[in-house]
Image (tube, rainbow, N blue to C red; front, side, top):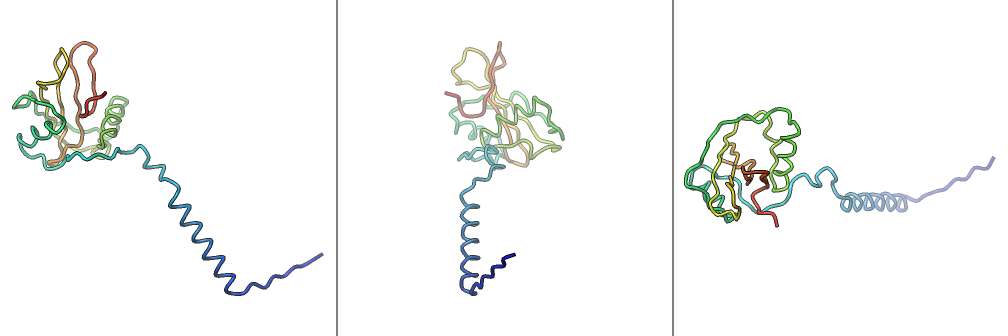
Length: 157
């Protein structure tokens, strides 16, 4: 049986510890946070401060939509505690535009629906926003004719 002993000076010991910490910090800084990837898109749209009809009109104008001066419908709705496949699909649209409806599960919110006057489409197009405490938490642009369409506030290419 052979026994080897190594005598490490305290300088070498602390150098190894310091090098290990530097490598660990570098690895943590380089590896992305995979939990956050795809969670929410980064956007420069202001969704808060929506208190009046004028605020809602101004919100739509930042996307170049002209909506009728008063909503077709204003309804109080409750976001369910558990999402079914329809809510999950709708929330995917929201997450793509920087919103996340899942944060508001179980909350009572107000849904405003407007008719869009200047959308280049032959049928009727509606703009919907969902507001909670003066903040838009979700919304979409959709067609109610035929097969229709639905997308976030930005027009798809």
